[in-house]
Every structure is written in structure tokens, then in C-alpha cells.
Image 1 (cartoon, rainbow, N blue to C red):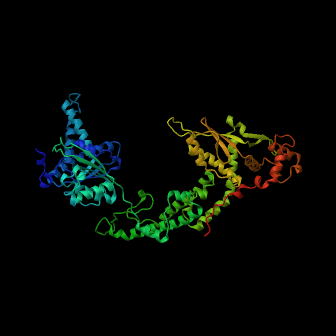
Image 2 (cartoon, one colour):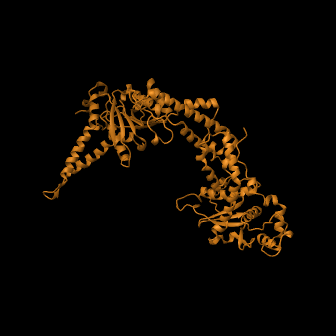
Image 3 (cartoon, rainbow, N blue to C red):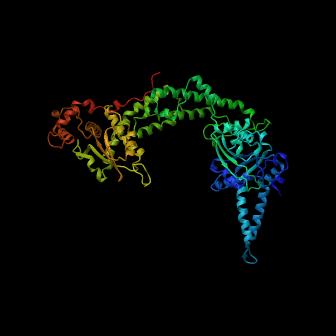
Length: 611
């Protein structure tokens, strides 16, 4: 039977050129089928492109996934019947029945005690039918309209794949573009090359402009249909268009935001703004978001009676749309969202943003930052207002002293006793006889700590060392010395220093704020302090907290101390010989405001700006 005889209408007779498999392959090349769920074939013919789509998707589906939904438009009734037969279920039933017959023939025959065998021709038939079964099982097909130019649907299609009639292919492609611009999606189209190469009509010229605007990719193919079911020597153009999802603006949110004159902050804004700017903008943004959400909930409540799943209006009718707060899997169909639960989620979001703002918590060590981030769930019961921010800041400041003290002493232990078992760390410590105790210690100007994760174990890893891991370890040490330093040392961009060192292949003597760092692949970090005064203050603070120095330390002059007290000072500041520590102790007494001050008093207050 001639291909022309397959069609029953004059509209289809002139433009019916079934797509050859090679052209289908070119048409569908480069598509990520994991991103495709709904497909439209607007000039389906007898289903060649439908089959090609199903074959491509079946390969993807072997690794998991749902069936692909394909909607077809075809003007010719006879071709529609072919598509319905091939992909609508009847052909699938025939394939399944024939496969069952072949499998039945191979079942074990208990009477003759043998298994049936297929002929070579039947084996070949079984392989072909099994592949066909997988393809047919991968799709769900619907014929949704006859003439694509009069087709209208609000359904979203991830892909429109088409080989429209050559005579009015421009109109068909423009129609596809119109559909996809509503919600975004891909278009793959085969056109007569002359349609775009020779735009001699207004419609063609309009199409060419559209293709340029959409940055369409065009591939020209000669002889594409020369050996097809209905051959022609016409050159064709394969057109690939990717239309992005249009950006939608919320009319509710935009109206409220404009009324409040609030700009929407980016993620960088949230973490990089100064505290004053952050507070002013983020509190206003919180109020706008809350008001917008509450208005949406009220609108949903008012809309419910008009979007029910039945016209009966009975007590068991539910809305076709469900608005939920939080995890949609916990939503009950048709329930109006709980206002207080919505408020809790929004408050949580903003309190989390506050506790991630570098200006607000950037001077805290990682363990202290973690402690305050854990307060977020409790803060969800409080509105995100300047008053409440000030209250939490005051509470943080009240707790800061103890937290800082514990953090400083914890670092002292980490640099001394915690790693004393490690052979290389033995030189970290200077031992002396303490107050009422023996063999206490302080740190030297150079310490070594074991580390892990600074270097990749993979040979292909290009980084000299892992910047993030190094930064996490070093920044916690720097922050402790920030508490002790009183902002006397110039700031250093630690991340930038480490990044530049990494890019330059440098692992030795990397200059940080208070010390130079050397990283070794064997798993150690060498820290060499440049400022002995801050090391001395660190030792004095920690040894006093541990009661390793006399109670009179820093209060009494060296000459006024007892012999026992002077012996401790001589061991702490010198080599233990009589008078060895007198000069250094006098330096401490002279600069007591630096060496003996409580670090908590010098911690910058985390306060919201005055209103």
C-alpha cells in the first residue's frame, strides 16, 4: 500500500512525510530524558516520532522512573486510528499474548520430562517482541485533538517534538512557540529548510525573528527524506529551541513589598550585610513575607467553595487545590493552613538568617556559633522584631563571658594536654612547678597539633590542601586570640590568605593573623606565634583559671611575695632558678591592663541598632 493511501483527508495527503528513524535520532539528540515527563506530538502521522520518543525514554526508564505521557494531534482520522492501534493498547495486548504463547511453548513438560524449545525464527521473534513490549510499556498515549493550528491547552509540556507539514510548517512552529512560552519547555522541529533560508512571507520573517530572539539552534540536513517511506529530495532544517520558564511575580508580595519599600535581600546580603543594615531590611522583609502568606491563606479560604471536586456542594466535596504549610506529605486535603504554624516556619527562617550573619556571630568560635544556632527552634515562638533581637543579643552577651572563658581554656588543653601523647607535640609544653602542685605547664611560642582531612587522599585532587578544612581549624584558634588581643592586631583575610597559598602550592609558613602555619601531609599543623606578648597573656589567663599560679599573682609585687610564690613565678616566667622570673613578672605588673584583663570585657557586644 502506498503511503499516500494511508491518509483519508486532502489536508494530510499533501503534507504527510513519515519521519525516517535517522531523522528522529537527529531530532531528539541531546535531550536529557530524566527531565521529560509530558510530550506533545502535534502532527503525529502514524507515530514515527512517538515511537522514537518511547525508545529513548525506555532506555532512561530502565534505571527507574515513571511512564512518559505523550499527547498526539493528528488531522487525518485514518492515521489517528493507526496511532491508537499501535500505542493505545491493542498492539500491546497482541504482543503480550504472542509472548505468552512463546513462553508457554518453553515450559517444562512433565509428561515427556523435557522443556520445549523455540525455533531460531521464534527466538528472534521473542527478542523483537520483548523489546517492543518494553517500549509500549514505557508510555501512556492520548490523542487530544485533530488540527494543531486550532489546538489550545493549558497543559505544560516538557517537550514538543514535531515534523509538521512542509507547506505551513512556519505556522505550526509559531503555534508551538506560543504554547511553550506560557510555562517554558523544549521544542524540536523538522522544517523545510527554505522556510528559514528564504523568508519571503511576513509569517516566515516573523518566525525567523522569533528563532533569533530565542537563540534557536538550526542544523541543515540534505537528503533526509530521500530513502524514507515517502521520499523527497528537499533539504530540511532541524530546529532546537529551549524556552526558559517565565519568571512570575507575586502580585500579593509585590504590592506589600512596594508599600513597605522593602528590597528583597539575596543570600549574600543575609550573610554579608552590616548588622545595622541587616536588621533594618530583614525585619521589614519578615513583616512583608508574613503579611503576604496570611493574605494568601485568607484568599484560599475564600476560594474554597469555587474549586470543589464536584458540583454537588455536599459535605464530602474537597477543593481541587490544597494549600499547605511545610511538608506537603503531611497536608490534609482541603484543610486551611494553620496560621500559627505558618508563623513558626517563617520566624524560624529569619532567626536562622540572623544567626548565620557574619557581622552578628562572626567573632564567635564554631562551637559557640553552633550553640546559638541551636536556639533557633526556641526562638520560633517569638516574632522577628528589633525588640526581640535586642533581647536575644543581651542574653548572648550575658552568657558570653562564661562561654569565652571555657573556649579559651579548651584551646589551651587542645594545644597541650590533649595531644601530649603525640610524639611531635612534646615540645609544645614548658613544664614548671605550679602553686601547690607539680609538673604543670604552659605553651611555647611554637606548637604542633595533629590534624586530619587537610590533604586529599586522591591523586587526581588538584588542590594543594583543603582550604575549608584548614580555615575551620585555624579560624577557631584565631578567634580565641581575638578575645585576648583587644583588637590591637590588624585584621587578616584568613580565607584569602589560605586560598592564595593553595593556588601557589604553598604549605609552609603561611602568614595568618597571629602566627605562621605550616601544613604537613603526614597529618600535623605547625603553628609559630609572631607575638610573644599574646602567647604570654594566653598562658597567664589559662594558668590562673586552673589555679596553677599563686592567688597573689598580679596583685603583689615580686619582692612582696613569699618564697614559695616567687618560686612558682620563677618557674613560670623563667627556668626556675631564683630570680629568673622577676623581670618578666614586672613587665606583667606594668602592663596589667593587657596581661590581666578579663577577655569577656573586651568581647564586642552583639547588639541590634538603636531604633
